[in-house]
Amino acid sequence: MANIKAGDDIFFTLTMAEVLEKQGLFEDALMVYKILADTTPGDPALRSKIETLKGLAVKGRGKKAPASKTE
Image (cartoon, rainbow, N blue to C red; front, side):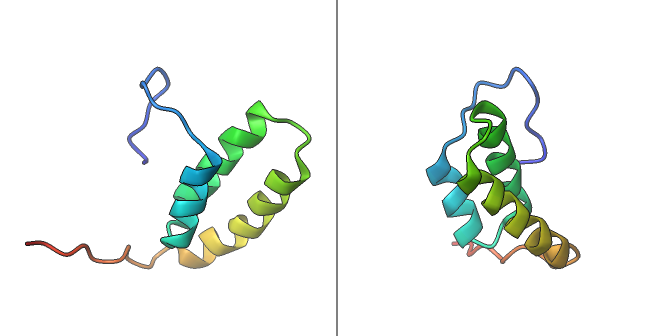
């Protein structure tokens, strides 16, 4: 998700953030939660998720993403 640029035709949802989080992609999930929080200021649930994921994203740096299966 690091290659996403302003103007790209993409949208973010709470479901997308939750899926990324469950997959262990904490930095990507954090980015989506932050975008959602910017569009919904004052949402305490989003702020709580952001604070939780900040710690997980820092811990996860340096670890490789899960290997994908190739067929």
